[in-house]
Structures are given as structure tokens and as C-alpha cells.
Image 1 (cartoon, rainbow, N blue to C red):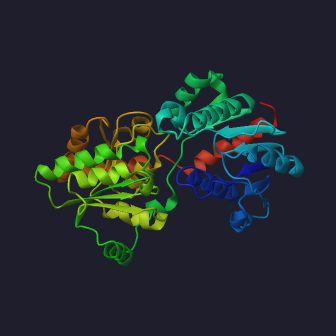
Image 2 (cartoon, rainbow, N blue to C red; image 1 turned 90 degrees about the vertical axis):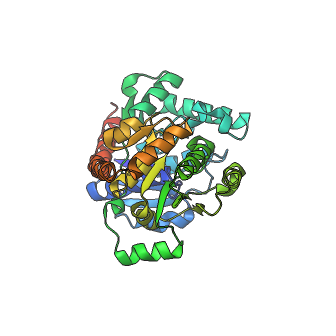
Length: 371
């Protein structure tokens, strides 16, 4: 059996985590299937290092481009694969073999107001519609995302399989004190801070997090800092305006994109991890924080209650006061802090990339057999 996987999003923030762990685990558990990895040229060395049954080919077209509708099918055809796995919602209509698509969420359909224009919405909806119709199977990462797919596209229930994500293994390993001190000194971190990690797009709801942070400081916790990591801060000037509106520029830090090694340390240094997102297909960041032993406050909407269970304090993301109360509940009580820390570590252990990728591999076999 020969399987092609699109690896062009290898280093994206969310989908990149999925793609990297998918191929790494496949390399561990399967040395018989031949895998053809469609890569950006700079990523071919990584792809070729996975094993003798993995080989890479350059795919020069950009994600979400017109050209990928032709070059991806061409590369699939010339390598004569049996199955193509698209790890996000773009599945070219000309794909010449059986296919599997992973649709992580329906964010563009749920919040079309956050897209740059009407054309972007039409493109997203048409691409997901094509993927749901042309693929042999649809994978998604939570029951909440599955219900969104069924609601928007009315595909058969048994065509959609939920296989959850997991955190990267490095978040379960304790960094050295030397490494933690180096990160604290490098960023001149306050003694106590709450943290958010992820991108800073509008549905992440960070303006309300800043509102909640101001409430906490007004109620006496004026030694507390707020750390926001993630890319694209420069695109959303409203966040910086919110910080300056409350005169919080000395207490709110935007660190930009961080490596996983640095993130693993920042999680452990934080008092609380806060994730007030309005919509998530899965929500990897709070699971990573849990694995790192940091108590989590997260939204009570979308997939987050399903993923986090009773191991996080769930709050109303539309109400800054609710977010503030959730954070204070952990900060004010060492017992609550210890309880949520223990629950989080136990919860994170329930998710395994090894087990998830074994299920993906089983679906490859089923689709190849025509099931």
C-alpha cells in the first residue's frame, strides 16, 4: 500500500502539531507501508529522515492557492499512490485516488465575520464542501467538530470519525532548573503571571481576557502579570489598544511565537493558564498546560468541556467577570490550585498520539480495501 500525505503545513501552529505527530508515529508503528510526503522544499530533509519507507517530493504550490488544485493531484498521480490524506480541509477536486481528509473545525463557517472578505468565506465553504463529498472518510478531532460538520454539510454520520489530538511528548518532561531560570531571566518575567498561548485571532477572545485581567488587578492582585504568546499580534492593533486603555502596558507582555521547548518552560512558570476562546475544534494549548502541571481556566463552549472534562475551571467566555472569577478561584486557594494541577496531569495522560495514529492507520487500511 502506498499513501501520500500533504506535509506543507508541517510548522503551522495547530495543524502543524497534528501533521508532525502523525508522521512521527507512523514511522514508529509502520515500516511496511510506503509513504509519499508532499513537502515544501526546505522540509524534505525532515521527511526523508523518518525511515526507509518514507520519501518526499517537493510541492511548490502555496496553501489555499489556485495552483494547488492542479499540482497536488499531478504529484499524487505520478507517484501512483493508493490513498491521499489531506490533513486540513483542502482536498483538490482532481485528486485521482481514494482520499481521507481531516477537518479540524468549522471556524470559518462559524465566525465568517473574522475572515478578510466575502470571497474568503465562499472559498472556505466550497473547499470543505468538496472535501466532505469527494473524500472516502472524514477525520475530525472532537465530537463537537463532528456535530458541526454534520450540521453544515449533512454527510452520513458513519463517514465522520472522531480521533482526538494529544499533546507533544516534550510537555510531559520536566525542564531543568537551569533552563527555567534562563527563560525567566531572558524575558524578565514577573514572579507571578497568568498565561495564554496560541494565535491571537479575534475568536480567541483576548480582549475580554485583558478586561478580566484588569478586574483582577483592581481587586488587589496588583503583583500579577499577563503573558500572551503567539504569532500575528501586529495584525490586531485592538489588543494593544485594550492594554493601553487600562494603562497595563507594564503588566501585559506579548512575546510572539515561541518554540515548544520554551513554551514547555513558560507553562510551568505560570500560575494559571487561561484559554477564553469562543470556538475550538480541539484546543491543544490547555492540554499542553495541563501536562505541564499548570491549572487551567477555559471556556465552557465548543469542544473545550469535552476535551478538558472536570480538570479545568470552565467559565463563560463572553463575560470578563466570569473569566476573572475563574482565575481568582485558583490564585486565592492553594488547595484548588493543587487539585486542578493533579486533575490536569491525569487528564492529559488520557490522550495519546500513539493510540490516535494507530486508529488513523487502521482507517488507511479500511479505505484501501474499499470500506
